[in-house]
Length: 474
Ligand code: ADP
Image (cartoon, rainbow, N blue to C red; front, side):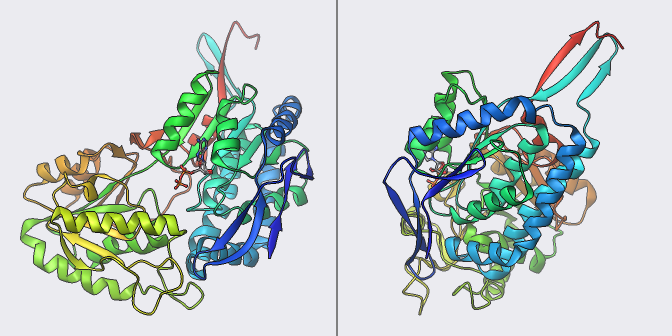
């Protein structure tokens, strides 16, 4: 049993001032695997004070010192590899292979990439008649969701550390244990006292407290649009800068000359990976009408490559994170049926033989109209909608007919059409065919998918203020 009833404040594990706790459940077994303390406003105040006190010296550390710190973190993170993988599988239910190749690796890449980006980063720039200095923004409050316990936390922490900003982190209540390991790593490598503070707790107390705290200068949040809106409202009271990475309903545009099997498999992998609990996942596949039958058959066949089941038994799709998430996804599947979309795979209920655990059938709807609720709202589960189009112009119109703009995907061969499609999609990141991940690339959304960018040098910029100096003696 993992019971963590302390917060990490000013370089020490200290008792919570509140007595409330919350149980953490393994979504594959529905068993309680531990509990955390729900922090109070008093705990948060202590953490913010520690970060504030650490600010003058941490913001003045040299770039080289911070590069070394990030490299040491990356090394120690690697030393804890097996434990990180096990922990994420237990708290999130993600298959061991996904915990290793995606969750563990993304965390590692953020720390090592931040070190690399920092080496190249200029904090002082001469621009003709003026000098620009980039200075740490101050104290940062970080609020993270449950779907990527190490990725979401690491990208924010690594960028903040690179910029010289002390942080207070509140991880998601559903998946708090990976953040405990990160905290132990920072402690072990000697991150200075007060530079990293962890306060566990609820969104309504600690999350709300961070977004309205007068002594926090910047809030970086990843999560739902509804919570992002509350955070932005709260932050406005103290004119706090916010970075928000919110939802998505990303399109995958299959071009006429695409390899059908490859594109169908790629589409299915979007709803399969992390059980579809990915904000940048493609959840609307746009296919030429002429390709409809062939593509649908290829998608059904591709499902065989993504087995659902016990995350410790070599499956690709584990359970959803919670009963609440399972109920939400079920109600969207019901809605799709009610709206008249055609179900070609999956549906409501649990997959055969998987009664225990929050397992869902990977579900594909075709004959979807882009105005349907299932095509407009983020489902956050293994549910794909397939929409047909008759011209590339129509495809782009459908792709952009959404309040979101986090990501887009294009599959095909003709370079000119690929370029036209990639540049026509209004989103923060567009991936052409099976392009490799690049952790130095900016990540964030257009429209209601958010504000700001994470990863690499753009991530570091978020935690900085620009100071203009006129007449700076050279
Ligand atoms: P979900 O509903 O999928 O859990 P949320 O956006 O509510 O997504 O959660 C993401 C993070 O935001 C979690 O750490 C959660 O505790 C936190 N959170 C929830 N409500 C608030 C709030 N009112 N203010 C700040 N943070 C919140």
